[in-house]
Image (tube, rainbow, N blue to C red):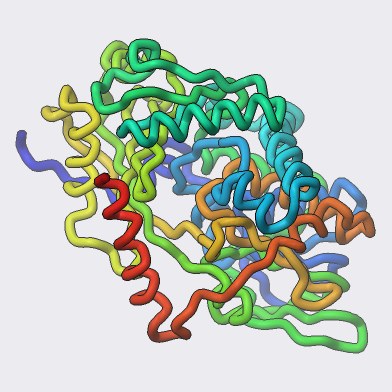
Length: 428
C-alpha cells in the first residue's frame, strides 16, 4: 500500500461542519453559577441549571467538546467502571443500588436530551462486552447472573461463541454480554448539541477562556480568566483531567491516562456491515482493553492502547492498527485515515469523584472511561444539588477516594509499575 497522510484530528471533528467560534470572555460578567468546562458534564449542568432559571456563565479553555467528551470511544454503557461489587464494598448495598439506578437513568437521559433538543448524534442501540479467555467467559457468565438476579436488569443477554459470531466477524472472542439498553454515538455532535441547547436557555458560553483561579469576595466568588472575570454565587468545576493548576487539590485525586483511537478509510456499507452485522459497539474485558464500533460513514473506529506514563507512545497509529488487525485479520489491506489520542480521567478506585471543595464550590471528575452516559446525569445531579436538593448527589460524595501515591514526581512511575501486573494478567 502506498503511504498516505494520517489526519491526527479526531474523526468526529472532521465528520462535522466546522463549529462557529464562540467569544472569549473579556471584562467582568455576573452570574448565579459559573461552570468551568464545556464537555458533556459541564454542558449538561449548564443546561439543567438554566432550565431551573439560573443565570449561568460557562468557561471553556479550548472549544466545546475539545477534551474527552469529543474524542472518546463513545460507548454509552450501564454502570460504573468500578463495578457494583466494588461499590458495595465501599458504600454498602443500598447506596451502591442507588448509584446503579442513577447510571441507568443516565442512559435514559441521554436519549431524552437528544429527542427533546433535536440533537442528531447518530445514536445506535446495542453494546457488547466480549471474552477472550476461558477465565473471562466465566466472568461474563457471573456478571450476567448478577445483573439479572441482584439488579433485575433484563436488557442483557449472554451470547455463546456461535451466537457472538453473528454479531462480530472475529474468531478472537469466546462469548459476549449484549446489552440492548446501552449504545454508541457521535460524541462531538452530542456535546455540541448540549451546548447549543444550553445557550438557547440563556447560558453565556465563552471559549478560549481558561479559568485560572477563583477567590472569595463580599458578594460570593470571583473566577478569573486571562482577560476577564465572573462574579458568581456558586461554582462548578467540570474540567476533569484538564483542570490542572486551576484546582490542585482535585488534580491529585485523578490521573490523566492517554488512550488512542484510529479510524479506517471508508470501507463501504457492505464491508462495514460484515464486520459488525448488528452494529453494536464492542469492548473486551482485558485491563488494557480493545474497543471498536462502526461509524455512520462505514468506517471502523478502533481504540486499544493506553499510556500510563503521560507520554505519547511512538507510532501510535501503527501500533493501534496492529491490534485492530489482530481482531480483524480481514482488514490487513485497509489504510488508517485518522489517529488521535486524549486523556481519560481515572481515580484510584475507578469510581467517579463528585463533591464540594467548599459549600458553594462543586466538582465532577473521575468518570474513568464510563463518561458518555454518566457525565450527562452527573450534570443533572449537580444542578439539583445547587438548587437545594442534594440527596442523589450526596450518595456519590460518600464514595471514599485517595490521592495517587508518589507526589508530583513519582505518581506516574508508581502507576506504571502497578499497571504491569494487570498487563501480565491480561496474558494469562
